[in-house]
Length: 203
Image 1 (cartoon, rainbow, N blue to C red):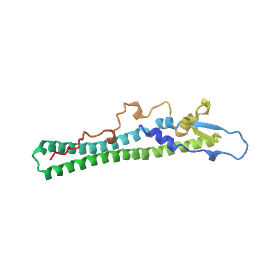
Image 2: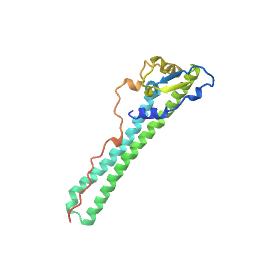
Image 3: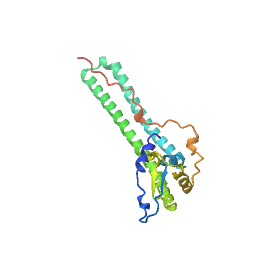
Image 4: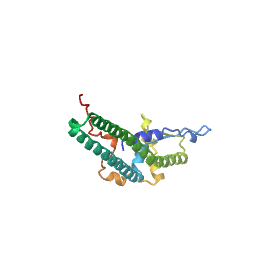
């Protein structure tokens, strides 16, 4: 899923300052790769499948609209030369409205897929966040940073394995969906219809 990285970074741009103590103990800082943790979560398979099914339904609606447009466009092109001016202009307006409708559907479908993806990933991110907080508290970490924001740091600072253990996830195993060849996700907005606005007939 191409947008998952963006969602992860946005969701986990948080501070674990609540773990800070008021005494003078040494500051213990760790980091986590949330994107990697997410990729190993068992929920990922069902989440991906549900998103693909949702995208396929939108793709089918898009294809239906595109077929309707192309059918009417072909009929217009075949009969335009014999149409009265009023009829021809009415057909042209109809085609233009259909084309605009398809373009709007493409945009709305893309936004809908993004919202659907976010609604599916949000509970999993919350689950990971809670596990990170528990690991930080149990192991005396004052701060947990995102690995993506670390330019240099010791490998021992990673708490990924502790988080996997807390979640009961085996990081050496891939989720079911990741073990198979993943089909390309259907997104109506990614493909433009083969539409051509009818040219005005010279008067």
